[in-house]
Image (cartoon, rainbow, N blue to C red; front, side, top):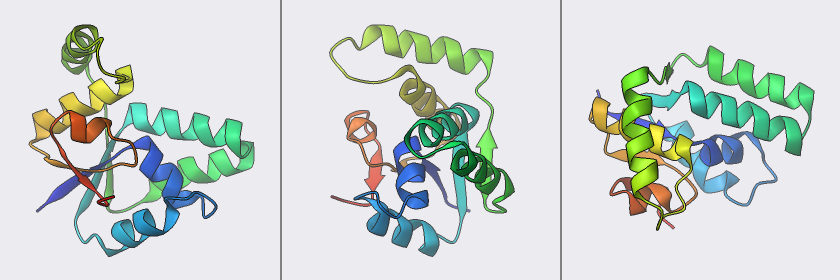
Length: 134
């Protein structure tokens, strides 16, 4: 079964029809027939982002949407992932990676996932295949 990782910006674009990346992200995610993988850190970022940009009730809807998706797995970032992500974050001062990005990269590598649905260039810079293609 093929898995794909979904980053915060892609979830936000998917849930927000006003986002400029909404259409390509929504088309991709709605046509994807396998598992969508994300993390508890991404869940946290998404709910917080929606809370501050759109509002509390929309943040609750976003959270419930992710939690109820039968094809979405929310993976917990564990202590070993945090340690590895911290090393990567500290090593790459030349990159704009957030710490959450680094945890995502570690989870993807641990699970053998090579593709991500993302709207920022960080996943591509880290060596992953990014969809939708810009």
